[in-house]
Amino acid sequence: MLPDMNTTQYLPLAQVEIEDLPPEVVEELPTDVVDQIKDGLLDKIPEDVVAELPQSIQDKIPEGLLEAAASNPAFTRVLLVIGVLAVIGFVFGVIRSAVKWMLYSAIVGVAAWYFFFQQ
Image 1 (cartoon, rainbow, N blue to C red):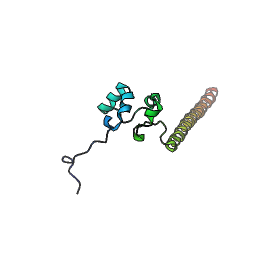
Image 2 (image 1 turned 90 degrees about the vertical axis):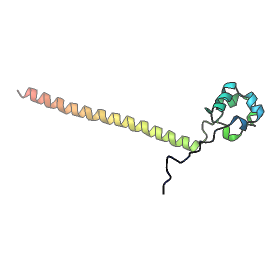
Image 3 (image 1 turned 30 degrees about the vertical axis):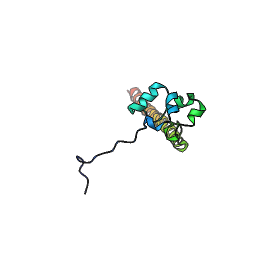
């Protein structure tokens, strides 16, 4: 039996709390980042903010709170291959359509020229 959707309670996803960070890290973070973490707008500390912190403070930040641009290189490669194939397919489709239009126009032009000079 399926649960009744009106009475089922859904738990919110876990958000990063400012209390999860060591106090010395919180002191070094910019106030706007701290405010965004408190408001629940950020769930990870941006890479550029972490890069500006001293190395000793960077080491104290838990790994799960760091935002990495290429956290999964295999997934990045797959997306790159898919993007390249999509662009190649698009260009091939445009060229194929242009060739079909040229052939159609050539056939109509030859037919018009033929019938024009038949008179």
